[in-house]
Image (cartoon, rainbow, N blue to C red; front, side, top):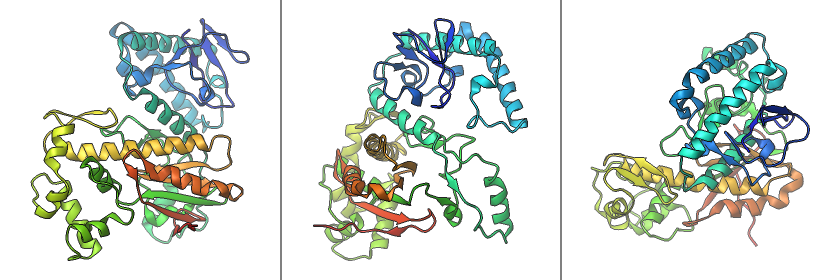
Length: 397
């Protein structure tokens, strides 16, 4: 049975099915809908059409014969949203079905049902569907985790700081990630999201945990480690740039110089470095994962790429998917706990950690570090705010 969620907040439960609205008991046999909602977290028997079309919007997925009708409905929806903004009504604080006429809800959900049916009948289930669903669950959970934004200690003596202060106080303190917008699968943020990916490092201290402290997990040289793995080389236990310095350059250069040399060579297909090429066979890796037109990654992503970008896309996408799988595993571990995933920045994961659950610390670090390509060295930082994180070294027995 096709159905649609009327709202995606856990406190605003309601669905459309059989041309009716249900707010208390749901009918039996619910099977397919447009998009995942946290209300459906424990339902393993539901299929999500937007994952079949890899995150395309309703407009992009809509068949030709429904477009005029959809345009009319979306025009009305836009008018409602504008009115909510003018009245300063936040959809984070109100149920959608309390703010619009019931007739509109019926019309909107009905056309979503028709588009869902079209996509599922015409589309093919992606090879990485279960990963996309797991990621959707994490993104949806983060979406309704209110950030603890404290601007009281912000020094607004400069014009730049005053502009930031004004802007940040006009934004809802919630992060809305988009798992489909980037070519490589790396998370981006939606237009009205809190700007976590572009937040100036000078202002990060405005973010404070809702529990006791932030814990940040970050792979040591993640993309270089991915490249090493794709080249068939076992993962070094220590810092990878120091390892390259010792095993490739015979201790000839300092770490920062080695890092510069590696990145200058790695992402420039025309760059030459005989010593690095003896360890990293770029041509061999591209022969395996790039057919001259598309990159086919280890994680079943297919990305159109020319010779200049093929290796870059391959490494960035593989690293991103590796990281996101660790994030999904940790999210599953933390279900029902006080500790939760607050946000991520590229291949850095930030947890809002409860001191009462410190017994989870080592298990989380181990889960993050263990990858399909071997154990990645993980950097750990801890802090009372995101602007003052300090390096943490776990005790070893």
